[in-house]
Length: 183
Image 1 (cartoon, rainbow, N blue to C red):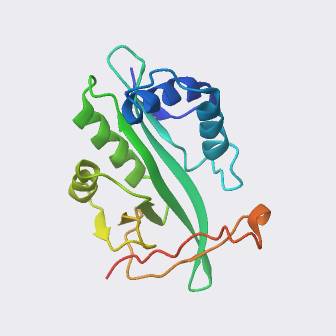
Image 2 (cartoon, helix red, strand yellow):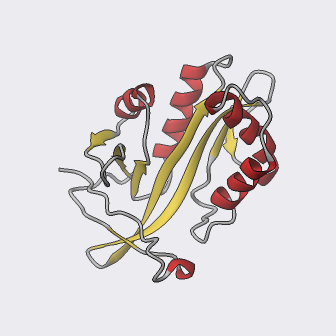
C-alpha cells in the first residue's frame, strides 16, 4: 500500500480528527467548523491548484496518520509568474512512525512543481527536519512569524517575488507577504 497520497475531500473528517488529537488533546472530537475550515482552506480557496495538492501519510493500518497542507500561491518575479506553495499544518500521529511520516511528507512537498516553497511557521522539530531535507531558515516574513524557505525543484537564486492576490481578494488587503529566496 502507498504510504503517501494526495489529500482528498473525503479525508477531511480523518484529518480534522488528527488535528484535534495533535493540537487540542483535551478535545478528542473534531467539530463541524473544523471540518469546514479544512474544506474551505484546502479545496475551496481561490488559489486551489490540483498540481499542488496537500498530502496524507497512511499508517500501517491504512488510516491517515499524517498530514501536510499545501497552500498554492501565485506570485510574480522579474515580471514573470511563478508558482509558490506554503506548507502548513504538518502533523503526525505520535503512535505512527512519526519521524518517517514527517520526513516523507516534507520530501514529497519539496519535490512538487512549485518554484518557491515556504512554511507559515514551524516548531523546533519541524524546523530541524526542514533544514535536514534541504530547506533554509529565514527571518520572519512578517513580525511575529517564523518562516522557512526552500527552492523549488529547479533550484534558484536570490529573489524577492511579489504576491498576486486572487481576483476575489482584489483590494481587500489580503495580499500575500513577499518572501526572500536564496542569497
